[in-house]
Length: 259
Image (cartoon, rainbow, N blue to C red):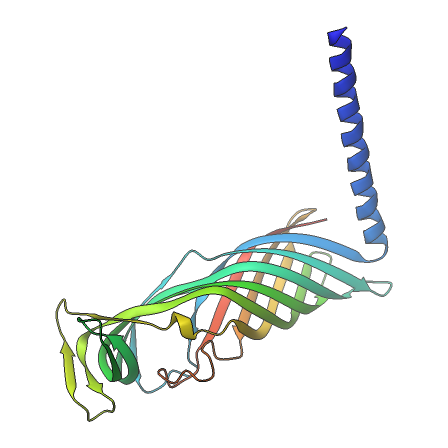
């Protein structure tokens, strides 16, 4: 009796699972018939946050290290017309963007934290180490075009909301002129460093443009590369310690599953 009940339960579960799979497949077929395509994507962001062009205060870039920045995205594309070559893509992406850099600067506007915890503001000449770690919720709205059965291209704007961010670092082997370039000289040499942290001055809303290409490697598997370019300064409007705008520019490379 118990064996029969067990077999009945297994059969019922199998039947429900099969019916659910059939329903999902029917939903995908119906979506395909009306030109809807869904895709889940995963990838890595490689790039940096930089002023454009490099200001005269930055004399050289002495080091750059990309950090592990992951992006997970879901897209819905609506294809138009009989041939369905043109489409509109709406996405939602959870991602990180970050980097570490070293630079040599001269008369670089800066606010540092001294050895006694006091804040010193002025113009820095010497080395600067910067770390950027930002998390974003991004929404791209793209025009898509099929170059062939396997290759799609897309371009359009995106908006991003930053729930948390980190823009910090330290200065070394140089000196700070307090208030202005001719002010009191405060030196930091050898192992003597001073930190800075502008994380609280980052914008929570950013926007930019995105362009990319996708290649259908297998029946459902895509390989993609998307360049995102921020168009507004990553710092708040009233933040004047850094005197030039900085923009996030990143290449996202990864794969996706289309269904």
